[in-house]
Image (cartoon, rainbow, N blue to C red; front, side):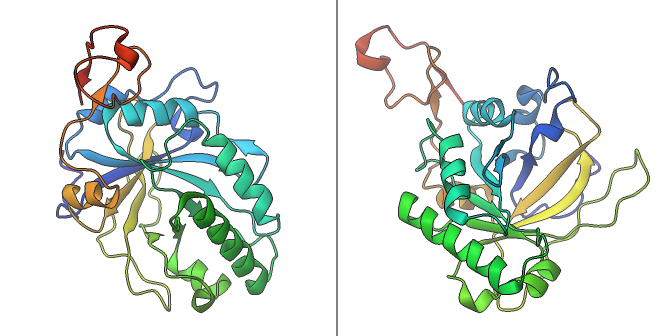
Length: 264
């Protein structure tokens, strides 16, 4: 596809939310098209919730589809700095119930100040990071953009985290697409490494719903993405009974039926 002329040395991914479905939620991206896309979609970030009271209505469907196609998945939560971190983390984890947290990598989206001071915003993020680390045994990734971080966070007060940084070109008039911004993204002060770069908020929609889709690049190859998730290149096998990854090939749960699983 002629659009993809930049950043070819970096693994490709997309991020999704209910805005990638139709307004009435009856039409949604075709994940068969996403799975067959060139360049390959190696990772998919999916919005789980916002603050403590909102669940993205497409999270469950998108996450099931992403797991079925074998993409590495990053559920993300939009953090409100003026709301209690504990309440927001509890909401995030409830949305994730039923998902094996060892197989995904969590993200905290921090890009809203809501009139709060730098100290309050930093403390809310720090508390959320610590709570999630206690729960899952690792720090989540932090999504933001350099200018916002410089203005609203005390990076020195935070633990060393992996950063997903947005930097893309200004929007072109509808329905034009915005080209991918070349990697690397601008780095916030006090940050010396980027993990993911959101390169466009108006790339061509993959899968047939809407006009646009957010594009991302990983600071590494597809093999590096798999390694970050603790996976190898071995194909995963999806059980036709429940859509879950089979623990072993051969027979399904408790030898109930002969497995008809398909490698993905």
